[in-house]
Length: 122
Image: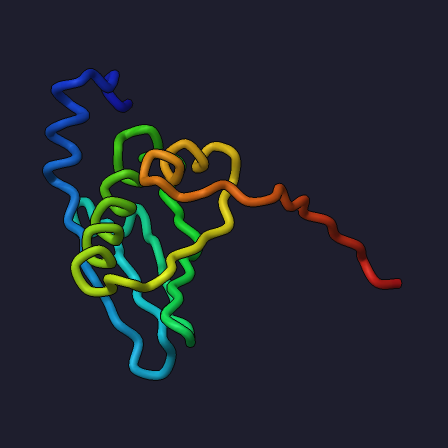
């Protein structure tokens, strides 16, 4: 059984997370993987595009490790990487409402709302 997460446990756990950066040779994708004790517990991506644009792609954290700061650590690692290497580029992302405050904190400008729809083809 997991012990309750207090601030001390949370900080210790975040310090144990290792972030690994991978670049794809075939595509313009870059990946950051969060590992804890040799297990992948999260990932985040970005794609370099034409005309000096970077698209921030999906992020995922294993449900047993959510609300422990892993998403923030992945996001901040990618953000610092982009800020150091891509001055003058435009970064954009599609995000869920729960991620919007982080993007606004980083001074992204909120655009229009987009709604997901789907249909099974019969």
